Length: 210
Image 1 (cartoon, rainbow, N blue to C red):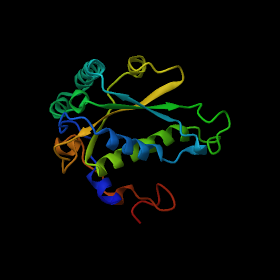
Image 2 (image 1 turned 90 degrees about the horizontal axis):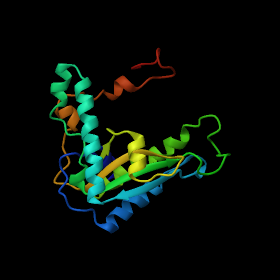
Image 3 (image 1 turned 135 degrees about the vertical axis):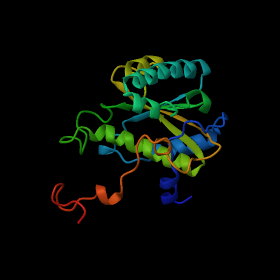
Image 4 (image 1 turned 135 degrees about the horizontal axis):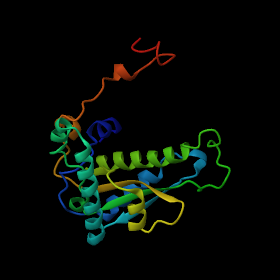
């Protein structure tokens, strides 16, 4: 699979996991791709916590379900109806969770390139996630990013030390298919913008669509 094909094919997988575990050799290749991501000052501020214990998966899934219900209740009726059929996680179905965590102190107090823009640290961890996701897609392995959780709950669940924070819980596993159209578009939550609407020339306000 070419890089461009992986980018086009990649989906946030929820309902298509087969329930089989990722082969360990394949999983290691995917993690190697993540670990090859560029990072500010070569700080490599990420770590990967692999979770396969069924009780832990079940406990996290129950927590996420509570957060999903709270979000649904906060929506206007019309949006709640649109949201209702959208599955937001595949925690137990995938059988494997990768919690990508971030250590903002990795690399010491003087990280080259981060003095003026401290957020480049967490941006680096996000780049590792993108590498992981595209590598998984090339391996025909699905990934789903779960974001309906309280960080303190997840921190305690996987026993993170002080100063290490979770950035993403990724469900990962073999899939029956990659949906041709992303779920949020298929279910009518929100469509995609055209590239021409996102490109500006020389300045934001005056340079749109030239």
